[in-house]
Image 1: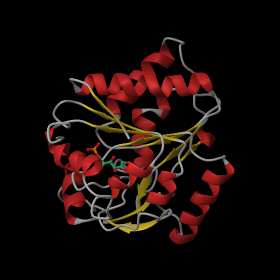
Image 2 (image 1 turned 90 degrees about the horizontal axis):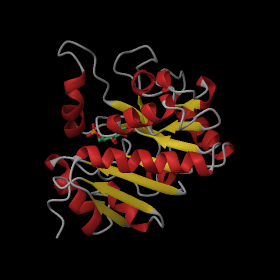
Image 3 (image 1 turned 30 degrees about the vertical axis):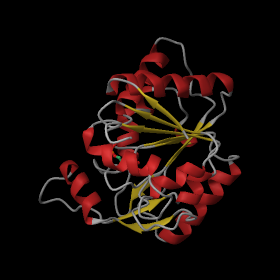
Image 4 (image 1 turned 30 degrees about the horizontal axis):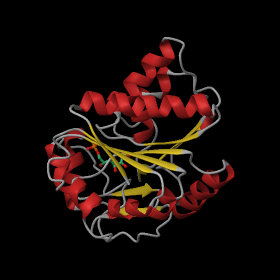
Length: 242
Ligand code: F6R
């Protein structure tokens, strides 16, 4: 596990954007594994900037997101599809048909999970997987006690995650408690993993991931076994490392 500690969240984003850009320059038809949440937004902004300056193209790549809420369609303001459209896809030259997320409205969600696994395989696997980390150590929506070998499946969100994400929903709005998520086993098959964490709220989860035992209690700790994982932290997120 390579751990990179920089001073600020802005520097984390710069590091991540440079890594993604380098990947696309090396292999323009890369499969990028993408994440939602607050953490990667600044990285996406930098990538959009590089695209606008004509320094980067996404025209040949495929993207596979980690997860989607079960029950939310692409037009729902809180769906992860909508998030990705707003924060990245609408602003770059990626082909819409080459952007992939699990379908939150699938009639048969279990079949959709299998379909998503097959899709990743058919694309040749994920070249570079971008990850955030939950305060409880989740990656994707693999909550604590998820099987470390798990594949794409339906997961019930923990109360902690529901609470952390409640800020995005109006109090009177339906907030899903289920999601379709790549499994930990799926994530572990990515050729490279780039996990970003910023802010003091992530410090404990980061320390457990990096220094704790590999245990289902902290799903991100499975990454200790990944041969090419890079964890990029600002000083606040790194504060609990010994
Ligand atoms: C998002 C995802 C989640 C987030 C995590 C951190 O697709 O899978 O695991 O990466 O919840 O979220 P933020 O970045 O909002 O703190």
